[in-house]
Amino acid sequence: MYKILVLFAHPALQKSIAHKSLFNEIQNIEGITCHDLYDTYPDSFIDIKHEQTLLLNHDIIVLQFPLYWYSCPAILKEWQDLVLEHGFAYGEYGNKLVGKKIMLAISTGGSANSYSTTGYNEHDISQFLLPFSQMSKLCNLEYLTPFVVHDIHKRHDTTRIAQKTQEYRQLLLRLQQSDDAAMAVMESN
Image 1 (cartoon, rainbow, N blue to C red):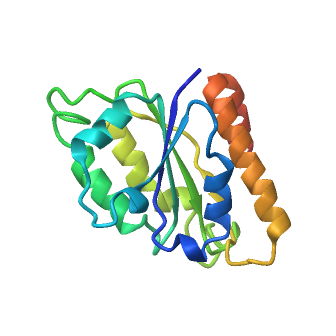
Image 2 (image 1 turned 90 degrees about the vertical axis):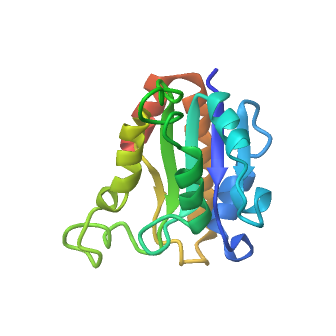
């Protein structure tokens, strides 16, 4: 069974419906470590060695966050800058993450159609996530297809949020068990 680390970064969790639901759904699943960066580091002073140990002790890393201004929340960027340091994640002797996988679990305010070449944002969601793809490449991580919940501002759509929450749970459970099964689910996402 693969061990999964979910690095959760939401600066306004009290306002969130989707991420609160997604994150709560995966709490207490054996083999999944849920790690809320804003809760752990309210002062933003990240314990680099602790974070690196967490990475070393897990096979799959999930970065869960809302897409803010086409990027991640500030603490997750700070985490990347400090934890994925030269000599650990990349560069000479920086091979500590080789063989591990990474996946994004994100939400967007816009619809799936708005994230297309003909939509409002004029680009596919994967283009906005290129920095994460490149980070994965530099750190020798296998970049998995992101899990995306679009159109999150439709707060009244609790049925869709419940459905996406179950899809997320099932995806993580499949990732724990089998690469092939998870890949099939992810490609259909």
